[in-house]
Image 1 (tube, rainbow over the protein chains, first blue to last red):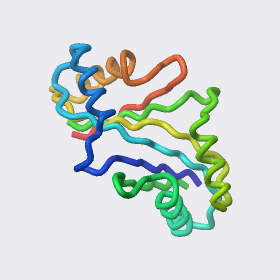
Image 2: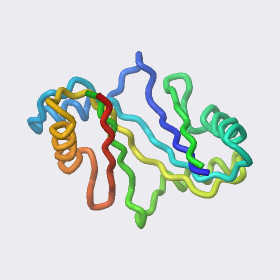
Image 3: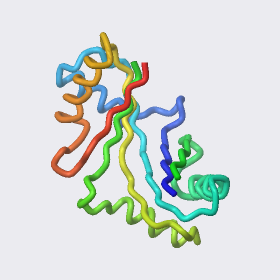
Image 4: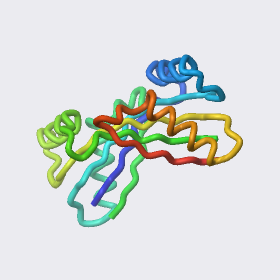
Length: 80
Length: 80
């Protein structure tokens, strides 16, 4: 089963990488960019009995390793 | 318009960050993980006349800044 985990900084947290990209796009004369946020996308190929089991296991992975839940949020998408 | 750009290493390129996460998940006793790949997700809020114009502009951003096309592939999703 393929799982896609997106990890992003929480809204209130300064996204310095996003700000740097935003600034660089401006320097390259790309106008009309209002905001840029940069996150991680982690694609896992896992064995799981069903979607519920996969989601539970991946949530545990996110809480313990993939995301820093103090400053980051995550979303999980499953593709069977 | 919201645009989501996913940047991943090309299939043949060693994904050392993915390998490290895979190894760490194993060390944390998460079994059944066959593969892990780690990429970047860049979320842009841009002003564009229409989807075609937005896609063209973002493609140019990817080619010139957001992705290293020698070793990375990218996908673009648009949400109006």
